[in-house]
Each structure stands twice: as structure tokens, then as C-alpha cells.
Amino acid sequence: MHHVQLWLYKKKDEDKIVVGFPAVYNWLSSAKIEDKDAKAVLMKAQKDFESILLDITE
Image (cartoon, rainbow, N blue to C red; front, side, top):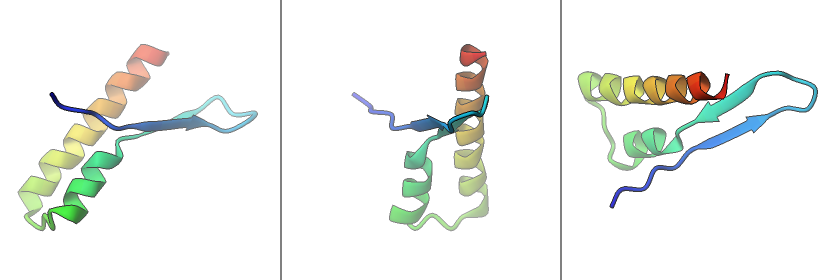
């Protein structure tokens, strides 16, 4: 089983929801991923996931 961590918040009096997927950043740091292509794939996954969440909340 895989677990997905994410965070989101909305500041008072704003219409914007901020979404994050901290696991991507943790993987980059914890695994000391320095390969440019590997980083790009993980960051794309981050953006894709954010896009999905934004699409379903609009």
C-alpha cells in the first residue's frame, strides 16, 4: 500500500487554495536526488497532482 501526503490551505478572505505534495520535496532531499532528469520527473508529478486537485475543487 502506498500513502500519499499532501497539504492544502486557504487564507482567510482569499479565494485561492494552496496545495502541496511535500513527499516530492522530501524524496529529493532524503534520497539526495541530484539527477536533473529525475528531479524533473518528480516535479512534473507534483504539478500534475496539484492540477488534478485544482480541477476537482473548481
